[in-house]
Picture (cartoon, one colour):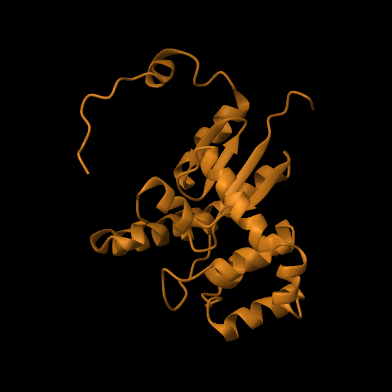
Length: 213
C-alpha cells in the first residue's frame, strides 16, 4: 500500500461533465482510495483568468449538446436543471460539512443531473437537505467550518494546478475532464506512461508564440 499513489477527485456540482464522470469515479473508488474534494469552479476560473464554457455564448449550446451526447453514449441518465449555470456554493458547502461522503456527493449529483432539479432555488435546496437528512444546513455548515474549509480546499486545488472540473489527481499528475479518464486509468496501470517517447518530450516543449491579452 505504501506505493499506492494518492488519488483526489475535484468537482463542482455545476458541471454536467462531473456527473457524467461520476460512475467511473465510483468504480475507481471500489479498488482505490479516492478523496472527493468539492471546489468552487468560479474561483478556480478566476485564478487562471479564464471563463467556463457556459459563459461563452457560442460555446454554451455546444457544451450542453456534447454533455448530453456523452451521457447517452455512456448510459448515464442526464436531465439539465431549469437553468444553467447556477449557483452551487450552498450545495458545495453542505457537501463539505458532510465530509464529502460518496453517498452525499451521489445524492447531490442525482438531484441535480438525474432528476434535473434546481438546488440553487430555496425550495430545491430544502428538498435536497431533506434527502440528505440535514434539518438545519446553516447551522451544520457553521458548526463544521465548511465555508473556510471549502475556500481552503479550492485554494489547495489551484496550488496543485487544477484549472477546471472535473479533475482527477493521481500523485502529482492531473487528468481534466471526462475524456481524460481513460488516460488516468492507463497511468494508474503504468506510472511510467509519461516518461518515454513523445510523452516525455511534451513536458519541456518550448512555447513558439504567445497571444497578447
